[in-house]
Every structure is written in C-alpha cells, then in structure tokens.
Length: 367
Image (cartoon, rainbow, N blue to C red; front, side, top):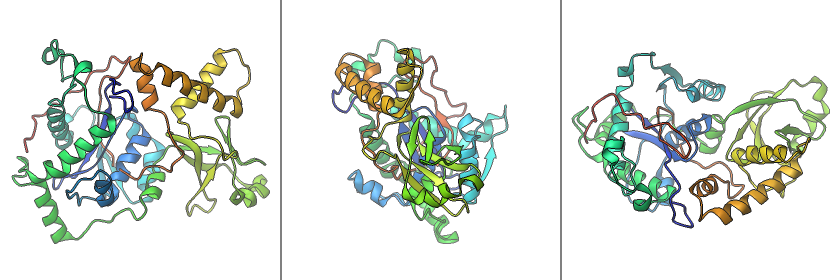
C-alpha cells in the first residue's frame, strides 16, 4: 500500500543472503526497484553491519547477531552479479565470488529453499498474489492489501529475528541462532564492516569521467567541491576518475582519490538542488526530448522533475502506476541508508511486466 493514500501500489522485490553454515539470514533488502548493482550493494551493507541500531529503529526487542564481511559469496548468474561494481567491491574487501554452474540448479539449493520458506510466509499475508493463477483464483489482492513497503520490511525483520532464527531448521536439525553462536564460540567473530556507509559506497554502480574546470558532469548534472581544486589544477595530467553514485539520490557522487586510498563526497555544484533518483532523472530527460527541446541541461531537468512530482502526487489516488512512481521517488538528500549482502533475487510481477514469480526447484525447508 502507498504510505499516504493507503491504496495498492504493487509487488516489491526481495533480495536475501543466507549463511550456509548456520542457515541464518545474514541480510535482506525489500524494494520496488528491480534487481541491480545497487540492490546487491544494499544487501551486502546490511549483512556486513551490526544490526542492533537497525532493530532499535524498528522498535523490535529481538536479537540479530549475524553480521560480518563474508569470505565467499555463492551467486547465480543474474546480470547484477557480474558487474564491475560488485567485482571491485569484493576485491577491495577480500570477498571471493563463486557462480552457480549454468544448468545445475542444485548448486543453489540452500538459498532456493529459503526463498520457498519466505514465500510460504508471505503468501499468508493479506493482499498476496500467490505463486500461481490456480491458487489465486478469484482472490482480490488489491482489495485485501494492507501493508506498506516499510511495514512489510518491519514484518520481515520480525519474522527473521524473532522466529526463523529460533526454530529448528530441518536442514541442520537445530535452530539457526544456536548453530551461529556455536560457530562463533569455536571460530571467533567474523570481520565486520567498520563503517557501513563507506562499505555500501564500495558496492555502488561505477562510472568514469575526466575532471573539468567546473568539476565533474554526469548526465547533465555538475558536481563540485573545493576539495577538487588540486585535481582541477592538474587536470591535464589526470586520467579519468572512478566515480560511484547511489541511483536513489543524485545530489552527490563519490570520487575515488587518484592514489586509490578512498572516496571523497562531492555534492551538486548548486547545493540547493533537491535529491532526485536516477529513475526520475531519466523520466525527465525523456519528457524534455519528447517536448521537442534539442538541448537538455541541469536547470530544465530539475524543473521538470519538480513538475512531475506535482503531477504524480495529484494523480496518486487515481492510478496505481502513479502511486508506485511516487513510492520510488527520493524524498530527501540524505546519505545512503545503512543497511545491507548479495544473492539470488526473487522475481515478482510488477506493473506492466509479464514476469511471473520463479518457483524454487527444491522442497521448502521447514523451520
């Protein structure tokens, strides 16, 4: 449901990571955005970070001690797992990647069973669309829906930390939490991400740009900070810079220093610019070009996004697609959210798509 109107928005995507040894859920992400390098990065950031503050923010009196930078990631062959963003981030943090052999689905048995278990729970919620048309029957999912995206995330966090980790898992014949604690007692605590925000930045989408007199320009938006002055002065000797950005908020970028030691945050040259998402940016550019303008510039883009937001809010009560678009907007210029690891993603049918939920090829492991 939409946060404001409480009208149906659509089906989200779930990305989840599981610790193979203990079967504990190490991190997850639920979002309206389709799987991408960003969703992988957010899931990894949630996995690497200590979760006490996260649970307190949700007012949950439960424990979720699973946190740490994995030594190895088992992945399927989805495109979001083969990009430079993930490869560079894993290399920087000493994480090895192991991809599932094509045509051999049994290699993904642990995560597929978890997906089946989670979907079994989700399909008990009001508003479910079930796993196949036969189950769905005449059930009106839109009329029955009651949860917003944030409420669904809250529900999942409670189901994981308050139930799943405490119930006997058939695959290991003991509760995942018990198995995790024994592993910690025998092997010590895993290495955690010291700064979850910096950890997330290391997994954001990558691009390269040369520096100009006024800073960096990405998709018609110029970014500048006084910290760039020495690089601008020596720009003739500088090769292109590696830049990462969060598609949810284009108000700033993260530029890798020439010596490769770390990233510096560079805001929009016009600091008063609101935070907009890449989704909104692309829509604005399409609208500008469709209107016959030969040239696209920063001022027109932000003015168009502002107009689009007004139109979407006015139409939110009339159209599910408009409400869904509103749910994908960036409301503030806040820094990336501290939260989340990587692994197979559940495909759900979203508005306008013909994709159907992928049923796991393995039996569900009961808790």
